[in-house]
Image 1 (cartoon, rainbow, N blue to C red):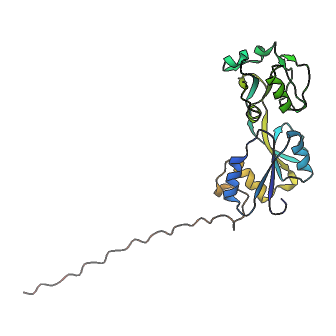
Image 2: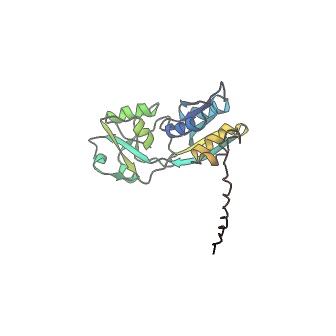
Image 3: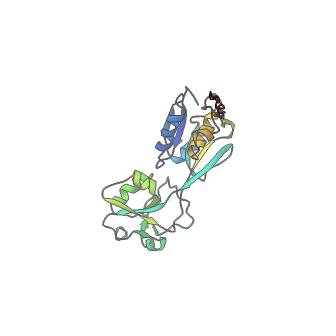
Length: 228
């Protein structure tokens, strides 16, 4: 943390807005600054002290890092809207055997054997690959979050049921597990404010116990003596 703020990096396609909203409610005294950057750069910046934590795509080099795996992303294939794949709801890798498949230099999927046929070039970035798909030169497989990020009206995407998946994780330096970092971990894991481990007792609302109410004992009725 620096200059009274907590710096959180996130890879393209990750949407940290929900968590940022919870942070704003719980940690009002420390602003959260969101910094989007290429997935390959986040860990380097984290090690250099440029950010306090980062949402990264796994796997990453975990030396001196704590990493919490969070969720898997659906893999899709991006095609022109008039492509045959657009006529179905989902496909398998075997359905792409005859397709020219682009492999951008910033590829994030953990491939073993790549599907289809190698395209005529390796684009510099996912954005460049999207432009080539729009020209009809081939197709592109990537996480659904990135397909949404690079949405175009002339393109569509379909789920690839048996493709490898990208996984998102939260990473931070082992030596920097501060109270604020614990607060972020609690938010990401869905802990309630009372169960979050990052806040000090003075910052949390105290739990007040109600004292048991005393039951009043009815007074005995006073008897009056009749005169004869």
